[in-house]
View 1: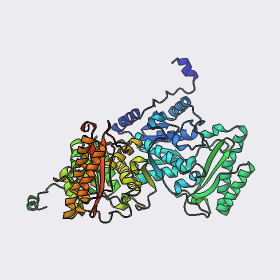
View 2: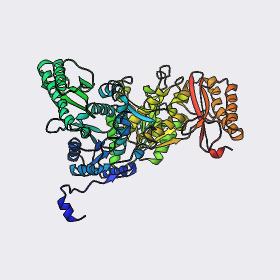
View 3: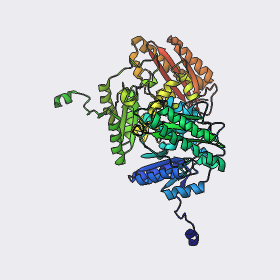
View 4: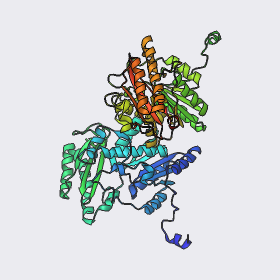
Length: 305
Length: 305
């Protein structure tokens, strides 16, 4: 490469190698393991933002080998969902991942992950019951099949990467709860780290799906975070019912009718309507123009009266 | 121990250490892995017979560390099945396993494997469709839940033992097919070895459940193997229909009405009624007095005309 080009390019980090096959990935990880190196893993669907990068940086700080996967997993999208238009920009992703500290990027084709096609898979890993049947798992929304798609692909990736630690974002709070449960129930030898949601300066939770938002919807979308802040304040001052009511008013001001706006136990996802000694999640999902967005706030017992 | 006792005891091998907790097991395996040793794994429900021991010996010949699990897994037994009376003799099992070459025996209590109780588990690994819905998986028999119990506990054990190779018996042919499929679909980094059925001198397939048989039923039970031999001969000479008819006659002579007696593709478990270029399984299940017995014969294309 021409050194002038390098000098002109603010992203001069050499991109991490991209592995397309399971065999290459296994070989690379096996070599690191033989050398006694620890492995940190950040699974993503790409179109990276600061949320993803915060996970990579955490892995970089804790582990010897940092593996990121970049795979838009078709089995976690439902029939009417946005699989076909999900945003992609692999070249940019590789550059950003490398700068944040990824050593390897596993970016397979669908056929490599699902040799019989993603509609031909026979084996599922499924967390059943409350955790996958409510909120996004409600059959009227994404449904339990969404989480079955997530847990199955994450189990496969865990078996391929064999990580010591895997990093997930709190923005997908229900997903994090489901994955923690899967790891516990199936004895996966992986420590799960869930890192705080990263937000835009105006409070909007970072999400690859924010790319769908036009200017007006982008502005309206900030109401989600305002609503959650109002929920926490209200809960602290007057109890959960007051908090949820305040949140609903914030959303209404922006013309947003939530798909759900609920307070639930942060571990069991059981509905709570009174303050407890346990952490509580207030979770919201809403269609804002062309984008279905989710967000949440974790209220620790010490924060509420 | 008194050396006279040792001299008097034909089983003088020092028994392999018994590990009761996941933590002990993980620590022992991790130490072996750090030293670069390969791990062979033989999952059992105990009450060992020569079939199990042949698996342990194979693991001993191929691997540096041989781990056997001894766990009567409640989740693979149905409501009317023999969980409560399943035969157990841990002391004898430990001695036999050690003599055959096991280095470690993982023999946990149910609560260690299923901390929420075996009826409280939320996460399943399930192979769906044909493989688990026919033969023993038919809802009128053990049902797909049986195999869901098997695949879930085997997935847990794979995550705990992290074996390079795992050994299963061909006697449980459908189970072996289902586990191979699970390993392939979920990318478990484990090689599956399926070893031939070990038989008594009179041909009866070894099974822990043979212990249920009184003298007369023990004699009648030999008809299963005779039937499968007749099936193979008949198939070779006149086709699958002829083979199955001959087998049915052998069973009838012993007064045995099979639960099923079928010829199926050895990999897909699809029903076959003509000879093919692919291996075929003839599988039989029958209640013989107090014991439900299964057996099978694998017919390779080169064996049939």
